[in-house]
Length: 122
Image (cartoon, rainbow, N blue to C red; front, top):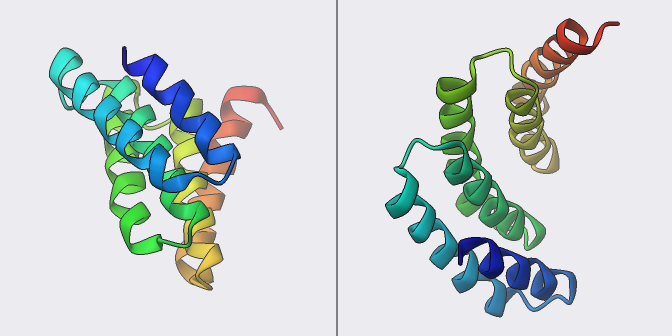
């Protein structure tokens, strides 16, 4: 059910129908948290989906805690050097970059790069 909700939400997002997409993402998040627990990697992915929606609208204050929570979940569930953690680090860094918070973005990008180089090679 949650995956179907997310699929429809993403479709709405691509059409610029953010107001219709948001409740679908939120409903999917509730389903994932209830079915899998609040620390499951799917919850992190669902948090990122909602954060991306907010980010696209310039709602950075709404997006940031979701990106941060997703990062914490992925680090705990997958380990601090997992490629998914690198992707989540980039999400937070890009949010900071969009706001001109370059000093905060840089170390996150550097850490993501280090993870990817370790996993994928230079």
